[in-house]
Length: 281
Image (cartoon, rainbow, N blue to C red):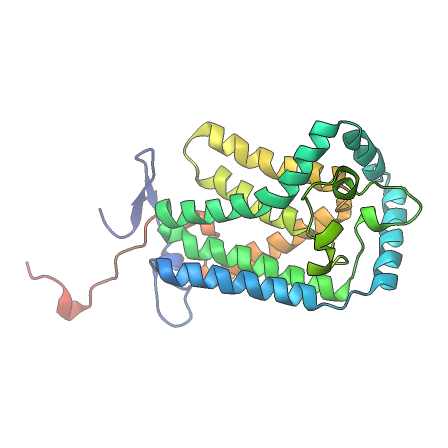
């Protein structure tokens, strides 16, 4: 097999994008085999940096609540302001809302890390570009937190929304109860629960060979959207912000590698031999 093809799990030969595997000045960056120790360190440092910057953004309570009212009015004009109905309906079913609280608190991290590990193990040629898309998505979100402080629906006055973590005394949000001082409560736009879950879903749908895994990939961001609204942690438009962040992240990865991450070779292409190194006939 030459360096210009890659074998998929089903055994099909897929041509590699020459722009993505060729080095040299003025050309796309060549994928490299990821190193485990470096990836673990990079993810740990990146998440720490993300959390530190996000929580360092000034908690502009008055502005954040004002922006929440603006978003709520805009959604009414658009005819999509049904978050309150979803929130109260889910809250009326105790086992359902408690499950959603724990879903919100845990799967956001567990599944994202799981997909990264899966990529590292089974798609090393696509790992770096896909990881870049995720990191860039998160970086754009940080700018959103700084430029547009936004209170989640559960913090709006008037008793319109139920803070489901407070109501049911569950551990489901870093910004509720005893944990609220550990996280910026006014960083709801964009929703990284949506940005990350959609990244996971698209990655699984594009690269998984098992049909049921691909279906789960599509269901995961859809279910996450329902959870963030039902728990009153986000507006619908926060989710739109998360989608836009991911679009920018994927665009950056495409520009950097010359191809969308999912179109790169599954395996890291072997380095081309210099003429002096080429084996003689």
